[in-house]
Image (cartoon, rainbow, N blue to C red):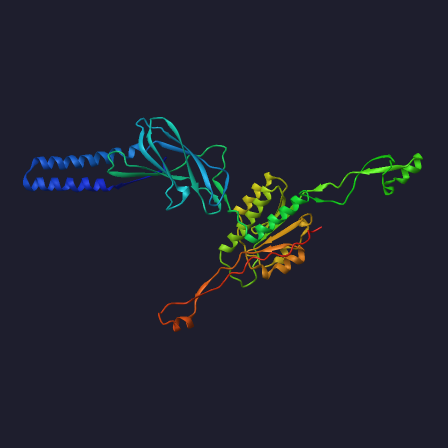
Length: 408
C-alpha cells in the first residue's frame, strides 16, 4: 500500500560479513594481494545483492484478518488471516506480527513459502487484557531472505473486509467475590429444591363439573348450582410458576472529596460481568441499569440479550457522580425483581443506607480495600539487627446482608 513503511537492519551475520570483507580489502591493498581484494569485494557484492533483493519479497503481500465480535479480557481469541501475494516473484520465510497484541507481546505466524499470486490461510491466538473496542489494524512483516544478512520489516494495515464489524469489543473479565458466589450457589440450590420457580397465589378457573364424593364443600360454585339445580363444583388451574428475575444497578457514585484509585471501577465492572454471566448460564432474567456514562435500563429475558449487556460494560466510563439520590429516584424498573444488587466503586458503607431506603432488601457491594504493608518506626529502632518489622493491615472480608426473604 501507499502508506507502508519499510525498514532494514543488519543482522550479526551481516555484520560479520561486512567486517571480514573490510578486513580483506584493507589487508589486500596493504599487501598488494589481488585475491584478498577480490574476496572482500565479493563479500560487499553479496551484502548489496541481499539488500537489493530482500525488500522485494515483502512487497505485494496483502492480508485480511477475521476477528470475533466480542470476547472477555484475558481470553484466547482465535484469529484467521488470509495471506495473498500479487507479485510474480513470490515470497519466502515471512513472519507476520499482529499489532493488536500490543507492544512487547510476541504473537506472530509465519509462511515458509508463498507462491506467486497464491493465497494461504493462517490461524493463531491473541490475548487482550484491556477492555473496550480495539480497532488496531496494523501488522508488521519480517523476512531475513536472502542469506540472512538483513532483517527487513514492512509495516502496513490489514485490508478491510466488507460487511464485517469494526475491530473487536473486549468485555470485562467475569469475576465474583467468594461470599457472593457462595450465596448465589445457595440460592440456586434453594430454587432447585422448590422446582426452580417462585409460585404465585393466583388461581384461574378451568371449568365447572358436577359434585363428586370426596370433593370439598368449599369448591361448590353456588351461582351455577342455583341455576342448574344440581351441585356444581369449580376446578381451578394449579398455581403457575413465575420465572426468577434479578436486578442489577451499577453506579459510579462517590462521596464528595473522596479520591479513589482507578482500579476500583474496573473491579466493580468485573463483578457486574460475573453476575451477568451467572444469570446467562442459569437462565435467570435480568433487569440491568447502568448509571455511569448514561442512564440505561436493559432487560435480558433470554440468552440473546446478555451480549448487549456485556457490550455496555465494555464501554462504560467513570463519570464520578456526586448524587446517588438522583440515581435511585425511580426504583420502578426493579419492582418485579426477586433480588436486587447494587454495585458501586466507592465504599458501600457510605451509600448502602441510601440504596436500601430506595430498594429494601437489596445487596450492596463494592471492591474490598487493599491490604497495605507498612513499616513500624518504633519496631525498626528497637530491632538490634536493623531489620524492619512490617505491620500488615488485613482487608475486611465481604459480608452480605441477610436475605432471609425475597421481595414480593
